Image (tube, rainbow, N blue to C red; front, side, top):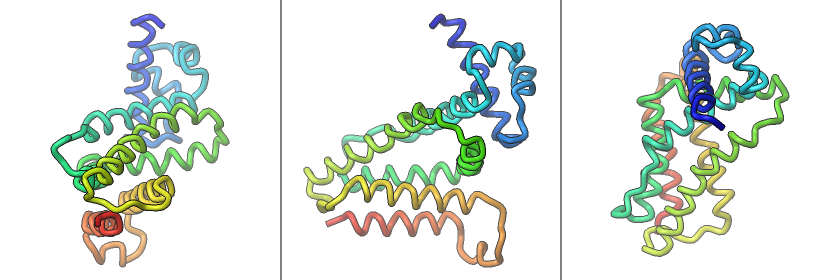
Length: 201
């Protein structure tokens, strides 16, 4: 793939992502993205094929931004401290990039409605987070800062899915009065502490 092609795809992806965040995925048309990116609509079809592929490309771009900024490793930390840092990424994103979880919420709804099957690239991209967690877990076993658990994969998915679901819920508009009973960031912190208490020796 040429540098020009790569650059064109990057411009389209970043333009689409910004528009999806500002206006919602369902409201943005490929025509709108083409106009904003200053390319022909046919160019988008040539590079992506359809809107679903543009949406997935935008989701991967956003995920990459998060991982580059927040998932750097610090070898001076213990395994438990590294896992704390990993979970705290959810809290940091919630504080600084609240739209990320709103976007994920809408992405799920969009992909289900579209019955889209080309999700492998996005799923493979998310595997990086799992690899980071596993490395931290292994480090914790070696330095004796965490205990061995029977099913690491189940623990990883249960905890990250729970955090993601909570952050999605808290990023939406208030529905019930009780939504304001507790500080939103405090709720996330409490859930993280529950996971860490379970892990530590």
